[in-house]
Length: 284
Image 1: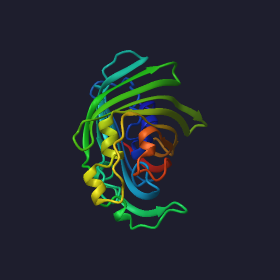
Image 2: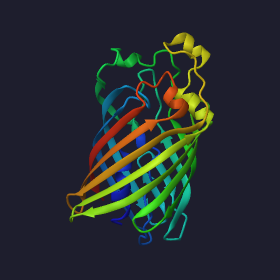
Image 3: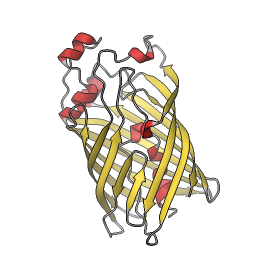
């Protein structure tokens, strides 16, 4: 089971990687399960495209059962393929909401924002008024599927399609990526890298980057109706430090750049942002 959890654990930490990699499948004895739980810190934009940041406490949870069912952060699914070179199955994921401050519930619903910061040169504004006048977006349960193909034991192509995001639950997002599975650095260190692109429909962009006529009247933003297409590109790296057979320190760095209509949105203050997280986890 050493292959599965160290690879996927760090991807559960960053909201920017909520569309992240599914855990790699690995044969397990019937009736068995493997589980990591822990707690970490995350520094991330207040919302996608925000010019200010927040530091939050973030729980870590990852479990896989021998029947292929897994929970990884705010996502859950099931491996159905018996092939060693192909992974596919159903996927569920919770997308956090967004309120007038630019944030909503953190992953797991128990996150706590500890620090708010602003980038140099940003116009001063009370954090809880950044999106004043904009409609709040509730957390959404998305449903879809994943499909991954191994090019060799170290590299795999990843994809996931999720529907149900946004105000009217009609937002759809397709993520395509490539991942280098954990490279061994000494006895205790594993590093993996990934890159990908996010493609969304117009309803998705309208919910998270659009401004309706009614919102334009109430807020400081002009009306804006984006279309669909490529929303972002992202690259990331994960480092897992195995402290003992039961304890692991896992850290994640992701850079994301908004593209297309998302980048041109009046809500977008900064088109390129970093998300950094680290956590300590215990294996049961």
